[in-house]
Image 1: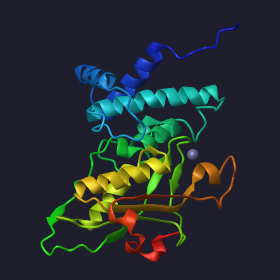
Image 2: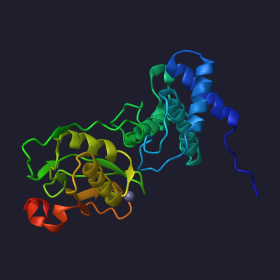
Image 3: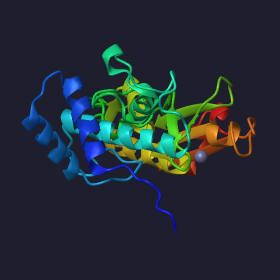
Image 4: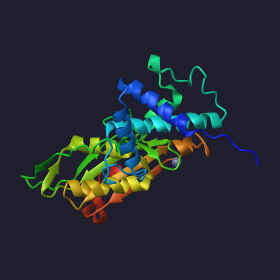
Length: 267
Ligand SMILES: [Zn+2]
């Protein structure tokens, strides 16, 4: 059969080298070598995991190498898809600070740094937010419910799922305090952080539930991801913009006594 052309090693090397030097603003070859070595050492880990969970570390230079390598391959993929990579709206122009569409898509997934918490898979790289705990000195055992925003990525299609502007579509986390009370705003931050990876909604729901049990030192947790919309079903394929997915995690007292849960959260 005829040979299909593939990109060469030296094309990848020079792409990474030139962009690395441009972005760190110096021609430091030992820094480049160190970054490549650190990047190569990172072993791929689950799409729903954070790098610390996989017992690994990555430096910001190695994270930059990762973005550049991935950008090179995505640009190559565009060519494979017969997309003109010199198109005005696609091409990069580093001197104008324009990283091009391939660079933008990679950044949209990885984040622009290890502390960027706002991109679609940034929860794989950014550190877990600290959750403040206080002694439950008044021995409160009233269930606490916190609603929060959630933007997650479906691991089958890499398209967002999350809640809509609709009262039936919400994310709520509840727990019954035991010895400790949790910082409420931290639940929001935690959910936002961990959602920004690739998930099955069922797994994300359980992950949040187990984590709240552990951090808040309680056996009774309720998590409901109610009527979330999945982009992969709404905008493509089935093109069903009405379809929603609801998942629940219940433990301890919530499991045995549903009257502890406000009616509006029981569907
Ligand atoms: Zn999907």
